[in-house]
Figure 1 (cartoon, rainbow, N blue to C red):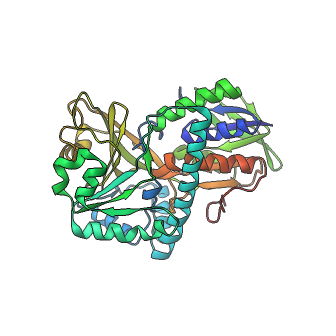
Figure 2: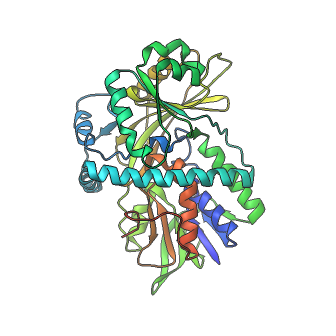
Length: 415
């Protein structure tokens, strides 16, 4: 069967790979000049089932409110006249109950764990290298109160079979010796030994090259999708800047730019772009870079070592489609990472980036078909898309061929 995948981020490319392995003739349509050039370009690099908590929780409304007048909040709300922002925010707030947070987190961690299994299989099958690092991730806490809250929160993930172990600051420094000089700054940490890290963009490029070479997947870069040609309950072709591209089936992996096109298919995707900031610095011969990645929880800063570079990320900003940034936007994360690893990288040579996460109010992605039965959705993976990507791709490929996915999709089907 001929299948067209819409979008060449990590979600689209992993989906194309799974479809091609199933024997389909696959074409990827991408408006930009290469794969992983949007949300997948410079994310945190953490492959982290151990951090699969949903953002919509009972504490989120207060954080959003405080962000209007106080810096340093995990979520930063920027009011605007955009009706989509207010509609999405209302749906987000409806998910901020303890019960909804529990259900959504359970769904997320199950998908993340499945995806990690699939990542290991795909990496072994393809040999794609992506600066992957095993050995777990460390979630660091600077005071006793936050450490106690963080430890209590792990129960919901541990109930799903994930190992999360509270450790002392000294134990954290034994796990990653780079923390030894600063261990006195922490009350403790949570170690998830099965978590890992890697460069999402490098992985996506490698998998795209493998799919093209081994399975003859076709990549149509620089091709913008403008609409669809339909007949009865089927999509016949995607209308593009290069003319119509027909297929027997389609998979919708368009991330933050998907809602507008989805409306042409009679589907209203509850996706809103949430802006994140990242900084990449060369290790540059410094003698104490981290061995494994993690999160400085009280400074809201994530980090991962990607080969000879250190990636640092922070902030979730409700700012629409604005991707602009200034050096001052990175002051907080630069100060936090220098405090954590004073001799871990060459902080005088930062590379700055800001990108948009395709967030749903629940924090879980969207699968399945809407009005047109041969258009399968695989979108809305939010802040943890790298972690959920490979499992989501297998789910989408199963839906294309009419097979039952490995996980139940309750609450994650397109409506």
